[in-house]
Image 1 (tube, rainbow, N blue to C red):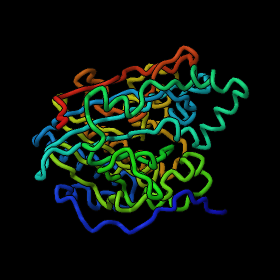
Image 2 (cartoon, rainbow, N blue to C red):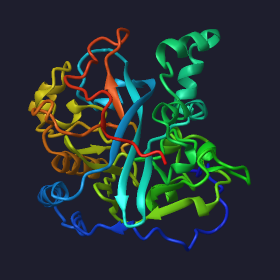
Image 3 (spheres, rainbow, N blue to C red):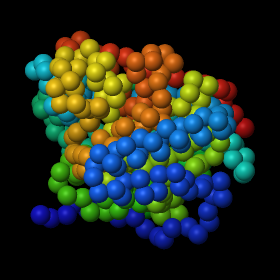
Image 4 (cartoon, rainbow, N blue to C red):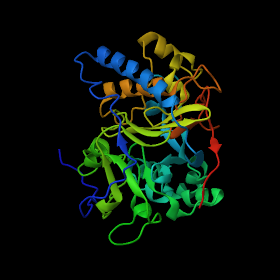
Length: 368
């Protein structure tokens, strides 16, 4: 089977390092036990200890989420094997997160999941879906995939200049075109000072994808980006006060989760699951989900469009919910805030989540 190459990055990584970025050792060796159930329980115990330690530390300075775009997404992937109605699609809302936090070098600003909505539409799966509307593509997109905000508009809303952004990151690189933000082939990026934080496994993957993967990655989405703009991470990482990136492989090999300590507890963000229901299916009112969990014993329901490493994804989702802990808004669910969250839509019956977070904001942004 041939490899599909979509990334031709240039230059070697910069030797200059941000001294505020530090490895986290709490989960080293947590997945090395031979039996899957032992790996799961070891991860669960470590996650609970990590949660206690992280909660006792500093909180972020600022945390805000923004709705970017509604996207139709197959129910067979979002609620893997659990959904009982014939509704083929549901809506997920892609979100941007602005996080500010203290470090030894001062206040840093991270944008998590800053999607270039227009460029990302070239992702093969979504491009085919759009083309299925034929001559009604524009109308279909306005109804089925309306843009709610752009990244640029979100920054303007809070008064944050693009040069104040230190880092961008994504839980994984499905659908992402990075060139607008970081610049490519000698052209400047929208964020002149920002670097990409990405797990090495994820970066390595996009250098040579197989067809099951490439259907979900934006063609040439990292082509021509200087490696001076990329920080490759090879472990769980503390970014600063109240912010960490924790490896949660499964949805992709290089998946990681944003962990942020806020006045409302710890929020964990990724796309291993697309709703609160995915993380506690026994409390779900979505048709079929509770019954499926009871019949199978599934503690979580995977977001399974690629299933690169399914057992690891299951363990990662348990890790995420144990770090997050119960939501103060609804204690039956966990403080796992998906980067793309399921949202009810009149065209897709039966797909409203039992509980959703919507948009969140804590603290006061620093713009100077």
